[in-house]
Image (tube, rainbow, N blue to C red):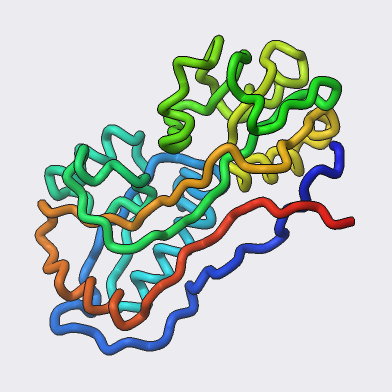
Length: 245
């Protein structure tokens, strides 16, 4: 892959190791159910869910004295469960979804760049996204700038992330949009595909994902908010930086 950008090899500003806070009355041992849809490498489903965001949320809630129960559901089920109170927390809610889904945003948990991948022989920059055949990941939204211009894109195909890379490598798509950390993981896992890809030097969009609570939850969210106010958790940051080499 061309040395267009240099990726951070570690997470920045991930304050999972929080200062000790006093437990509010009734919090110790209280179960709190947190959910998100599958989203590798941030959220990995399985008998024991894992991933960057899962680890973050578990450590955060455990530091407050809660017993965290992580449920990985398809997005609609996760939202439906939050709306009926079965799920207490959604930990990957995008900006703009609070009004739609009736969630209460508490703090930003992830700030993430969306990058544009294209074939190394036919490189596209982020400004050249429009009027091309673009592949995007199922269930993804790419911010107000992209959403306001999606009618300008010639063809949009919705596929899984690995298929995005394969489509670009085989020239069945001019470009693809993907979260930076997802691309990092896939390129590491499939280096033969990574060698055929160009990554735009600037992100197409930067999104913020939130830790959001359910108004229908039986939990007293005032206790959780008091913990958050004391701990002041900082988000994970996954962004690109120009290669200076």
